[in-house]
Length: 160
Image (cartoon, rainbow, N blue to C red; front, side, top):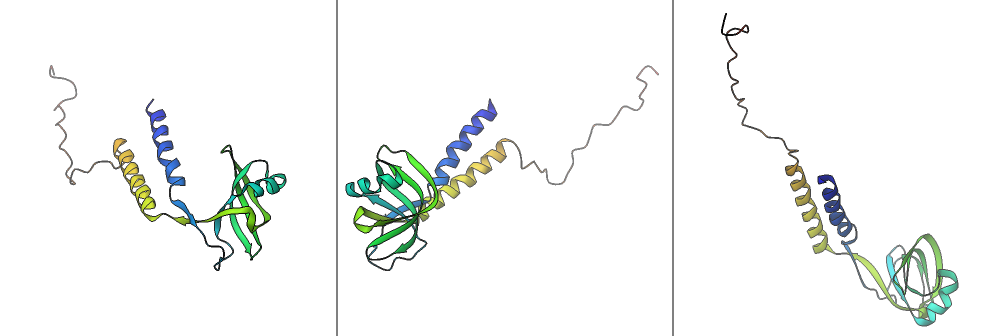
């Protein structure tokens, strides 16, 4: 039973830690955007219709790495596509080219430092509490061993 509750605590701690350190911020694609940036593209209704055959019906958001940007097109190596119903689909970096006017918003993924510090601090406290609860640190009594009781003077018993 204790192992099962520990598994739940690990799950509760790991899932937010894995996803909680990044956030998306608006990206001005007219400025010098570099290839290799992690971006998320919100798709317009027209984009949903035009990209439906290539990316699946009802797409809402495309996430991936920018491989090329120019004044007319965006080229992404796609690693996730989210649909209107909220179900994400994983991709393995396939290159997708589409016109800029099919994107309503482009956001870049940035590290959220306060949230990262909070997750790291909570993880350290969790590990310390786990180690302390199972006595993984051991105990140290200052180098002085307790004096054992004296054994009996005879091993035969008191009657001899």
